[in-house]
Image (cartoon, rainbow, N blue to C red):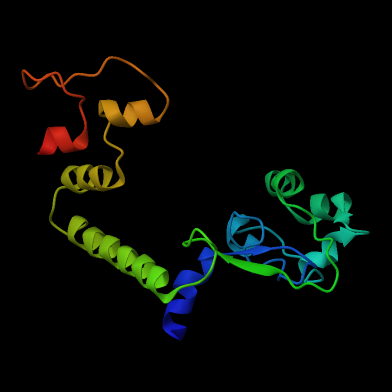
Length: 179
């Protein structure tokens, strides 16, 4: 379990109640821990330990947030994260992989297994001696980034879709083109 901790702890969202979450290392913003979200050259003020260090009278201390964080993160926190106001209630962990927010070993195992399957795919995709064009094409196929009509529609561009290869007037999708 300890070996898997680093892989799955990013799936825990901390809902601020009293602000007991670690400011830099817990995912309390919904974006991930601030330590990993901020740019590599960013200066971390070690005087801030917990979320309640940037709260003043039950509201976000906007001056501190703007001083200690990049502008986009400060804006996200002020607009999307409720300030901690409940006294004597510790911050609540929410498990992102379960709809009710409760941790289960099954969802953690499924998450880790999916990550390992992707790692195996990447290892088989980026092979020395295999043409870069083929590896890049396979990467785009795995990520769903091929510019087929269904992917363009997901980006918000709607147009008539039809496969030019066959007589059927089906939408050009990965499944249709490759199967």
